[in-house]
Image (cartoon, rainbow, N blue to C red; front, top):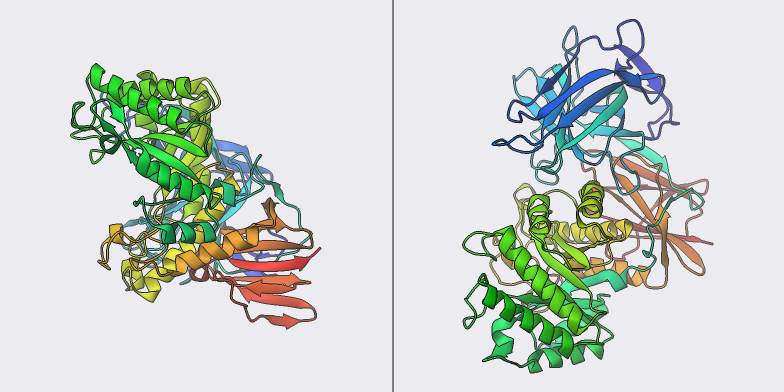
Length: 598
């Protein structure tokens, strides 16, 4: 080990003169001294190796993995490179680990820290981000204090106790499929602190925006549960949502083979008068056709007739279709989800819709989280014919982790479906009382809980825009109940009295700023965990900047600024010297908007 003075030229934005202790640079006569390779015994199909390879500079380390599917065992695997120093390493209270790393998005990565307590603490991190594909070398900085337990991944388990006895880089299969590849890393160092200062310039280079991602609002939808509430529709329109998502219930539409759409016609007319459309969820069972869900061939055929009749009735209007909701869960496909049963329903219903309206857009039922195993079984059972795959990417961590999950899903669909299939986020949200609330010591009605929801709601919308998802539905428009400690009652952007929660104000602020501007790209060379999305207008450029790392104190500097506003559109007070403004970028404060003249 040796102490280094790291300059501010590093991508992480270290201040000049900051001390870092080099742990491994993989150079010299014995580059892998203290390192060993291991696999997880739970996965008999897991194998790999650890060797010297090409690094970020000079030599680096390469952790190779081979994960196979073995009969009678879980599919996937895990491989670990473990470093044990000659003597334990001292770490300061707010220390962080830095490394340069390159890996495919198909693996989840975790830093393992074994300390004096005898426990191994886990720090999940991502290499694939909103700005960087998995094939790039990039620097990650992982705070070890982990004071944020409850804000991010639930596996954060607190700061190390005493000296560090060993460190490990764990690579696990992200989805339960066979795979092989390698994780390369280099220049592993221990930092005194994860804190960073960086400069944001309106002229800085950007990573390219995805195709067809220029506008935000056309892709934004909102989930509702009522057919008759004009005031709610006004709130949705004014917040910038382009459509609503709603159950179009089979049992309410069909009576003895006849279909009645009057209630949905009234809703769609009200939406169209506001310039909005609908995503109809065709669900659930029918008492005259086998109950819930339809399984027998004649019941599946009856559902397909319902789907075809619906498509014919709404042909030429601003509607899209989703076939069922979360068919991979017991709640919506009782008593137990079966991909083969859902595949038959999906195949017949999609065919009926396209026969009635060849221009119709159809998605499979949104899967809970991203259930690749169920999706693969559905495709293998013949479930196809849809134009898009629906997912519900709920998570305990921040929304930006979706960037690492989509590449493999896109690759899987291209190979498995044999055609270009879009990915729709048909339901996703954060409640004002959820996994993070215990840490906040609040509930769904508290200022803390509602502020937290606002931060995550804005970051979710920015994430789906940055990734170019064509359809993204926020769940929910209005709270479903009044219990402050029931998450299901607290997903709304407004409360039960239709009064704005901070999340509604945050979404309205974002869509208002984005309305007259186009997405130009993301700034790629910022400290780990910091994101900056640029919107270009006729007279200005606006950066929306946020920090997803609560354990790092990030300070942002910028020249030539016109104005700065916070998450809710309120002006921010800035420190300024010699024409350069400065602003702390707290994760808990959420995104900020910086306006520069062209």
